[in-house]
Image (cartoon, rainbow, N blue to C red; front, side, top):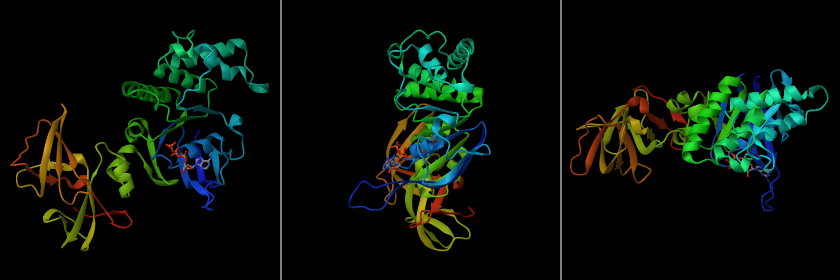
Amino acid sequence: MKVVLQNLTKKFPNRNKKQNADVIAVDNFNFEIPDGKLVGLLGPSGCGKSTTLNLISGLLQPTDGKIFFGDEDVTMVPAEKRGIGLVFQNYALYPHLTVKQNILFPLQNLKGKEKLSKNEMEKRMAEAAALVQLDTLLDRKPSELSGGQQQRVAIARALVKKPKVLLLDEPLSNLDARLRLQTREEIKRIQQKTNVTTVFVTHDQEEAMSISDLIVVMKDGVIQQSGKPQDVYDDPQNLFVAKFLGNPPINVFDAEVKGEKLFIGENAVMDVKGLTDKKLVAAIRPEGFVPSEGGSLNCSLIRVEVMGRDISVVASHPLCQNVTFRAIIGSEKNYQINDGKISFDILPSKIHLFDKETEKRIRFEA
Ligand code: ATP
């Protein structure tokens, strides 16, 4: 089931008496979630991710715009009639019910035409429990489960009604690092197996990139960019997106174009054909630095951290917007350090230029 969000806007009244303007949590959001895909809604706290999810679920009504499930306009359809499955950060399981009873619960509340026989309910419950690999824990209470297992019960409970759309709001936030990793793979596996159209809200870019078919990066209620995770990472349209994706983050330098060459300070780091002389911002991915004797960008070396597969070189440059920056280099590579100095060549595909004022991307021929 594809989901179409058309000119979707949500305003909340401002409770601050000194400010009359409404809070615009979601601002003219247009996006199509393709059938059977997992879309990650991504952005910093307060950017409007949860509000967008709650609009899709029907828990909130939009101020403007429409929502379609397939060809059906569901904008005015109440949440319980939309055929959605919801999973929140705090699993919200019933503590006094067993795993089995928790998963059965939504089916027992079905009324009228939707009402199921006892056998059918048991069958659906068993299928959902097997899907999230909880079939051996059916008689436990939530307090007797790990956080990851509890979240899997919540997912089974959301899936048991065979929803058209599965909505997950920061489902991994309460889990420790290892469980987060395991559970996110689990979510991807379950989503692929059921092929249910899924929207996944997170502020964690790595999490979103690793499991999403498409990501939508938001800021202040506005979509900044959407697309396949790798495409958005490789081709950010503005500095916000470039900075938001990637760990370690992209390194931002004050730079200048002079005579179709890009200068960082005195160092000419690259040809930029077609660009007129101007000051701008150059952002370089950590993997874009190639240490080389006589390299084009001269920096001070702070320290080298050996991480096993990679080496992380922490260096500084007076025009870097942070005190230090990080270059990631394959551990098999040789690099030259002389008296606390290190020089890099920069891979043209890993450097992105942005306008100083608008922070929009400036494109060039290397
Ligand atoms: P987080 O990651 O912190 O949950 P988010 O990206 O999900 O953030 P939302 O919860 O969607 O952000 O909130 C978006 C904006 O709308 C914020 O500025 C928030 O303060 C505001 N907001 C959300 N709900 C309400 C409400 N009921 N009344 C007023 N303002 C609200």
